Length: 319
Image (cartoon, rainbow, N blue to C red; front, side, top):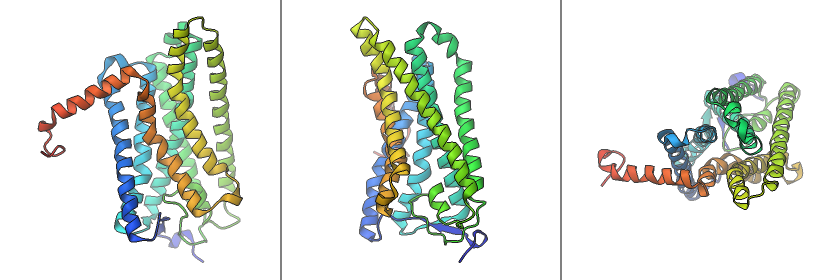
């Protein structure tokens, strides 16, 4: 038996024990990580540089790209480094920091997606009041509320989780540190506080889900009442990327955490963790730019500018 005071590091779950397959996993995840960083980085650059995109919708998209950059950078690089160097170790402070950042970024992203649903609702259902309800000050306050709520949620969960005595070793059944896997290492009678906090967070998540659902019910009602087919098409084009991102985010996370215990296994948990922690931040930039001609055009300009000025950055662009 061990306790938390004697634990100096945790052992993360590896994708495989075969050295050749470990290198293969590193080679597979490297382009995924680079694609996520590039896609979100291009959105950040395009929105920041084009004054035409300084609107509430793109302001929230800018924040979403920032959160996706942080999310993919919190979990995947450490797993890739472990695969490359054939190790499983992560330090105790490193595990706590990883859990804090992951909870913070995922929570803030979910709250931000809820705010973005409100943005779409006002834009379509109350277009005459859009400027007054979503001015620059209101947008900044809502974004700050999403980030601040994420920080508060992460502080509470991280402090509560790592205050529990750990009596079941230090092997985490996941490729990054997450709350359910740390709770499995705690003493059987000591994790009730965290369960209560998770239950409260679950009600909060459900409340946000109901708000998003209600917003889209009102949006679809308003769109179907539009007399112009062009207007309906434009409204759907505004909403579909956000709806796709929300669906991808919720479906992967809900299936990972709400699946029946009877079908649970380390391999399945590993695959599901990749789905909800890696896939959304990688696909979100492509979902938002797929049918958004304005954003797509600005991203092309950014890419063209990079290539035209590549000789000014010899460190990044080797001839």
